[in-house]
Length: 374
Image (cartoon, rainbow, N blue to C red; front, side):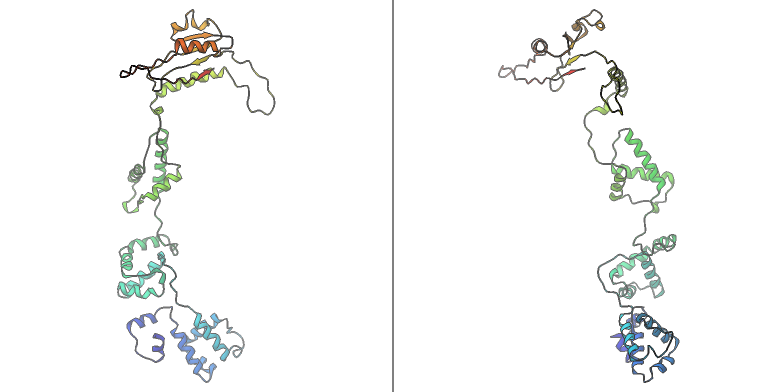
């Protein structure tokens, strides 16, 4: 072993010399304790030590909890040597591999500095720091990768002012001005009912980055992870469009809404939330029942069947319902009665399926009824 060769004053190899230069070895401490154990005068031997060896003794005493102020003979002798031996055994134990880890930015800078100061040998650099950082699993290809990106890592370390000592990767620049422009664009697109995809988000981000003037080397990678996080932040998810409502005439829809609102305004609800009882108002007495008929695909539609209270409503202007384009009947409550339903089924809305040209038999038809009273 290297420490035994030092004790015996034997010649060391280059690798052993390199290992002795690291902070993790305890050769100096063990050698000094061995000399003190062999000394006949313990205190005299300590007094004859140089400044370097005295510093080692002070450090070992500090680790062992030995006080150096006060009576010099109180903590001296064999008992103190036992404490120093125990301290030397546990001081700066070499790290043991537990699990593989990524190097922090500060560790990369430290390794790169040693690489340049010791001949720029990548394999030697990996072997030198393997005992100090065993969890990094340093290899020559890994050191080569760091050397190629050395400028990038040093810039990140300098910009942070040393704040990346414990960071294992440099945080990517976010460019909030570009993200804000993208958010405004997405909001406008959603209001217009236009569908977008993840690829569209990437292209628009690049477009806004060009407008702002973001350099190519500072742009986001816009990976799938970025797209998923952006969708989550903005409440976006994949949907499938249904129906044809988006193709309706917006002006016609607005006019119809206004007409229906005006109609419903004349029939206010008689029940609602309040903190006390309120008097009601006179509501509209107008009541009509509508019965509409059509086949399943809407290719055949019959005239509407309407039931009202008045026999000749003033709004008809002395015309009949047939002249106005619908069938009209009346009764006291404007409801669908047995008589009106029978007339509706047999005279107006009785379905007549077409004959089968091969069998000359009529097909069966199922009639689904739904009437509405307003």
